[in-house]
Image 1: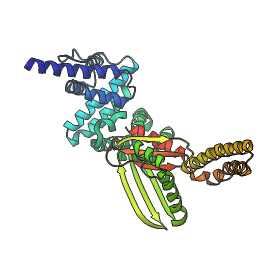
Image 2: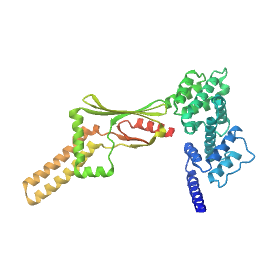
Image 3: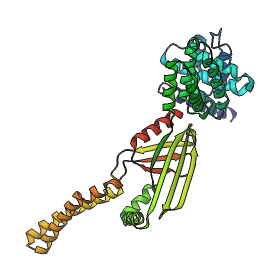
Image 4: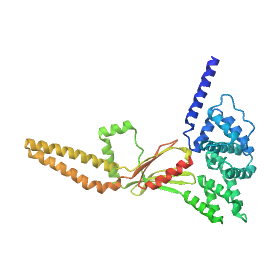
Length: 400
């Protein structure tokens, strides 16, 4: 029984390692590679060896002993730690290892030593492939604030030097690190340093950084959360979909109901404010602040016709079919009422095609944005500005 349990456990770990190794080559994103290091069965050994390498500035080691049953990822880590990276994938692995070591080092060190850690981090990024600056947020999470403060303080000292050109390389590395981060401390650091730097090239870099980190605002109509597939099918078959659509149009036109949503990406956080009002008086509100890791996914469906446009398209199709049918039957049976009714339906379909679609076309949004938090209901917004949505998606993907 004991040996069977051990065999099952070993088989499970081997399967997990094989799965991680099989997908390793597909992980071009540094943050995902960092996550794969943390999920590996030898993660404790990888973290320990990475910290040892960080303390010797990732110099060549005499030997790195592999743990028993090491996965292919752990073997690649050992090779990179011993001889350094030689390919694009190994350079990405080196950055992930440096970030893992930096996180372990910061959490086990005293706050007083963060100044030296910030200086060492920038020097490694400037002179070696062990650049952890692009993964500070992913590696440290909420603990990144103190390190970013130390990095900003270090860069401020360099900016105030009499000859900033002598430390331009370190300033460029540090500035790029701040710009890539969506942490509020890094964003504030870009603004402060950009206002004090004198070098024209560096000033341009920080100006681009401020533009990149500017808030992104998406506004639109706060839509209802869509029902499940079975519920939607039942509503279509029973005719409740048309009744619901008619009621919402009545609410909008007769009762003055308005639903507005504002999504703002600022300082590495998504701020959501949704309000519903009736005749100008608020009836419902929803305010949410979401960190990038609190968002399961964001769905963006591109240009769409909209519910009103879809209803008229369906009426056009039905009217065209019915009008043609009654007109043909009336002509064959020589029944004037059938024929005239069919022609009338065809005329109505033509009228629907030419007038109401163009009249109500503005009610159909250009797209639908759905934010799925890891907890709570989705946030659905009908948006007209697809460019703002693209910028929002870029900010979110850069922060995860």
